[in-house]
Image (tube, rainbow, N blue to C red; front, side, top):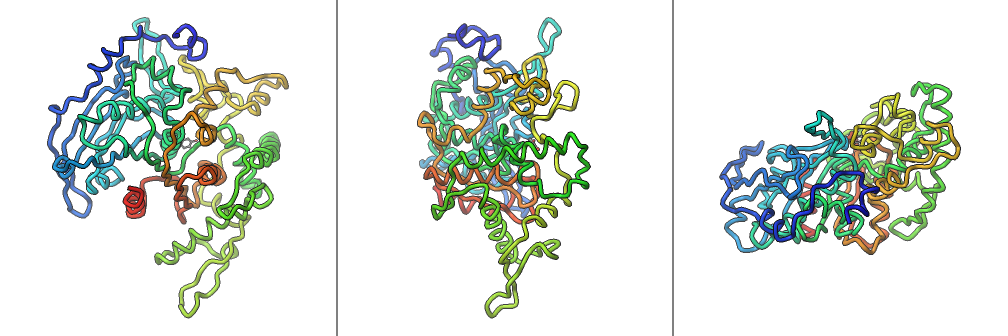
Length: 475
Ligand code: DHB
């Protein structure tokens, strides 16, 4: 089967080892734990046992990244009931991420404090490289390496569920940005056969990789439509300030014009069943922003720069005010005034061989280190050839790195519970990307807790009280 796969994967794969060999090599060793204590910012302490540097595949290609760390609070060791496993990826910028230790300042420390097991997997990314004996560098982490690494880590937890602390049927994935995208992929692609050849070749455990819940902070996803969405949303912003040259301005307008067809093809609906189209979609985004602003006021926050952007109405009988409307053009210009926009196309840069490639150009690039275009739009512009076609291999990589393609795929086992956040002034990708993801999941019947938290830039693992209240609810 490796021959059959060869053209598609373009990697040299070590000879497959037998499943019984995997069974032994991937067995969890409970004697290797080490006792530690985490001190939280408020002085509370959590005692836990650390199991570190556990390789989760047998054909390890990149020993810097392809292992996981696993942490169990002592409270969980003392009970028979399996506690949930909080699975935190530190992938950012679609780069490689090492398996980290739990931190008192993010959701991993908080998860231990709540009595949950924590798994922090390493995973390859576009910048992961190994040097061969021939002196050649191989980029090991091009798509879909990072994702299949995370899936292999989940399979390891399932495979060892009977002998490991924690309940592998209660895995909650968490990540930010590219990591938020990975979390969304883990939640939508469970057990999907599209990834099977990669997992087999890596020597992943023979086990399921679906998860219980997915936490996605500012997911940078739907990469092949993100350029259009960006220009469509931000087309109203001040072009002079954006300092686009005539070519870039033309590219922006073309991309923006292409977005409605895609948006309308999704057939999304509001919670009350109203069909969403490019005609009413800005109002839909606005209703999330109004909710977010109202929550910020209710929590005592001060809304920045409200002159002409936000319209208030005095609260009944109270002195506090609540938001009734937002001028979207003004609001979007305000967002851009806090951080300049990316240059169009925001994700699939033109001329990837001469310009600075984006993380996404590198993600879909090959193992020699080349960057590539991954949308027809940018490929046509870059080559000047109206008949240029994306390589079918790249098209397939783009497909399997996009969770939007798997929400309605009956070959996936989906996470039932979703917690999706994207900051109300995060411009790393445009609001329609997370809004579409959340809405498509909601329309498909999954339980989705979605918000655009007020005044938040591109960050993750915030409002941990909210997150862990939600986790308690879904358990
Ligand atoms: C991330 C941010 C980006 O703007 C992007 O295009 C890809 C990834 C990140 O922070 O992970």
